[in-house]
Length: 101
View 1: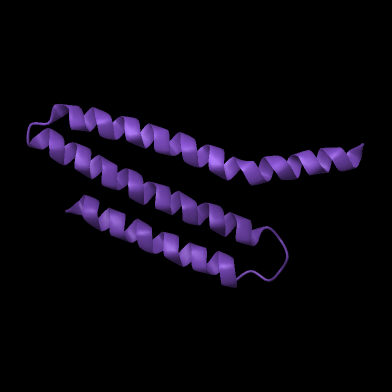
View 2: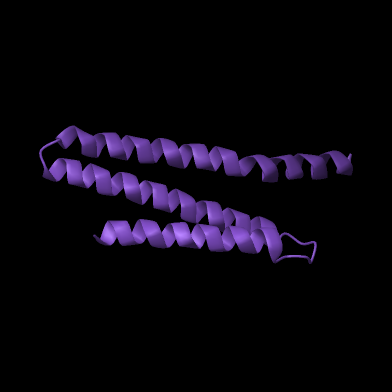
């Protein structure tokens, strides 16, 4: 039950942060980027919590391999989100270095 509440809460956080990042920052700074990263962090937490709940529930009813499968899924999810979120900042760093030359 706690896992389901955690998933719902984290999804609500995602929607709130995403809404703020799209409509709330007109300063021209990187506040929207920070809010977007926070939103995707909350979404990743929600999905990984869902997988953890399913894995634990499967282990409790006798499907021990479901727990390991959920752990592998969470690892792949974290790796994928890290790669996806690093693309923009890496490109900005490359542009800054190119402007120095």
